Every structure is written in C-alpha cells, then in structure tokens.
Image 1 (spheres, rainbow, N blue to C red):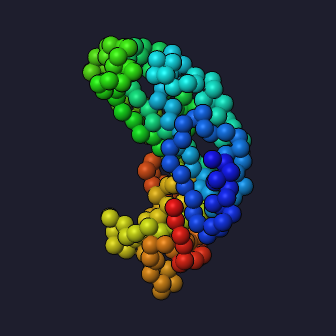
Image 2: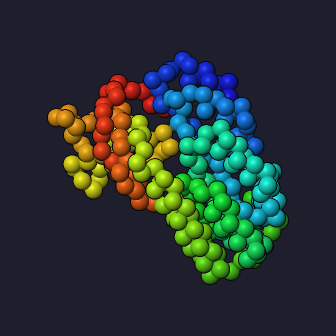
Image 3: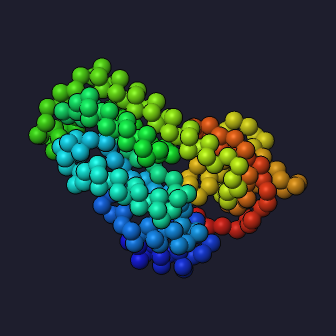
Length: 238
C-alpha cells in the first residue's frame, strides 16, 4: 500500500489524497514515511481502536493489544506531529468491566483524537462475539459509559481544534455553508471543517478552490477563519 500511495502522489501532484479506514496492523512506518514525504497526501488517519482495554481487545479478536496500538500512535506523532487522528470506539462490549471502561477513557485522554465515531455495543447475529460471549453489560450501563466516552472525546476534540487557532492552513472549498449563505466550508489537510467568507477581494469562492486560511476560532467540531490568499481554482480530489 505504501508503494501505491507514493505512486499516486508522484503521478498526480495536484491531487489531494485521503484514504479511508485502516486496520492498525496495516499502519506501518513505511506508510507513515510516505505520508510525511508528500504534501498532497492529507495528514489525516482514521485508525479504529474500539477499546482501551487489552482484555476487551482480545475478546474482540482485534489482533493487537493496548500497548501495541499506543506504539502506533507514537509513531504517527513522530513522523507527522501535525497529523489528525480519528477512531471508532465501542462502549459496553461483552464482559467489559468498569476498569476496562476507565482504560478506554484514559486512552482517549492520552491520544487526544481529533474526532471519533462512538457507539454502544449491540449484538449482531452470527458474529464471533454473538457465538462466543453473552451480551452481559446492562443497557443502562452501556448508555452511561457511552455518554462518558462522548464527553471525554468532546474535550479532546476541543483541545485539538483550539491548537489550530493562529495557524495558516491550506483549505479546499467544498460548498456553501448550511448556516450562512455568506460563508463557504472546506477542509484542511487534517480533514477538519473550516468555515470561511464566501467572497475574497471580489472573487466568489467555488467548490474546488484552494485557499490559504488563517484560523481564528474553533469549536469541537469546526474551525473558522479568514482568507489570506487564493492558491488555485483548478484541483482534482480523491
């Protein structure tokens, strides 16, 4: 995969490249080195963890433990300090104890994900978990744990987004903001949504425009900024 990624980056230097979910086992140092080497490869990785407990990860048959996953997180930060990381988390998996749950919360605080997809466990017929383990965590406990996961991640997201304030990011405009026709939204290399004025020096920004944007404020879910300059209006995306 690293070789393919490099081939695409070299063949299409104007292409903004972002790929979807990876299994942690596929996130090798070679892949990270290629990502760091090319500006047209987005500095964003979605790496599902599911749980911060090694015991729960073993029952999930994930093929890695907490220590191994955290080493991958450290390697990402070494190669790309500015890389955004998102993840998937399941609360209340079969046999999850309160200690397991607290381990997940601590992992979120340590990694400081930019964003996460968070769910409570729901048994699915014919899966390994359904065949091997009873769905033994009460629904009320699942709900409470999920709420705590969401609140912990919300704080992490806010911290990460505030860290972008004051920086200048290259943003690809995607469309008109749903909240204001006077603004457009786009994404930076870290996949964060950035809200910008729709018009710059008499020119209306259209989808496909690259701009340099100064980030002025942040919420846990988006950034807001001003336009420093227009880079190009000719772009390919993938």
